[in-house]
Length: 105
Image (tube, rainbow, N blue to C red; front, top):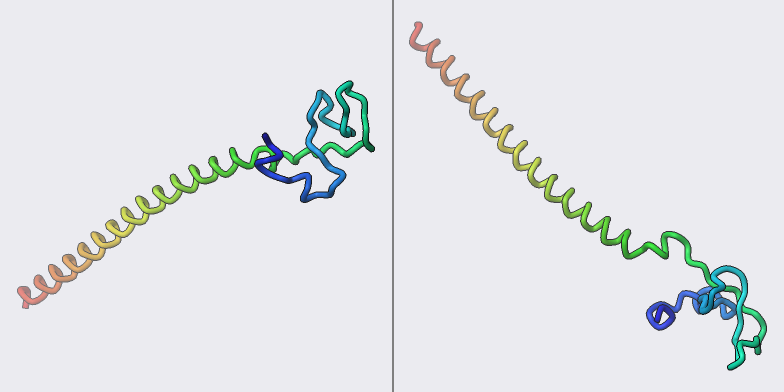
């Protein structure tokens, strides 16, 4: 039951209700056993697309965020390793050039 799960119409105003019959848009009210309206009509609450699809959006964004985090960590580790190897190579080259200059004297 959607009303028991989230009381969105009650948060809007007391004149809102979820559509309970074939009428999804428009107005509806309380009916008796013979389906005759017994109260003033209430405005049927129609959720926005964001509210209607909120669960799918949350799950999708969570999965995308998870994979983005894994990709970032992987790329960060590879770049860090590449920069470290480049630093080692620069030191080795400088050491070799200093050694060749000393042996040339």
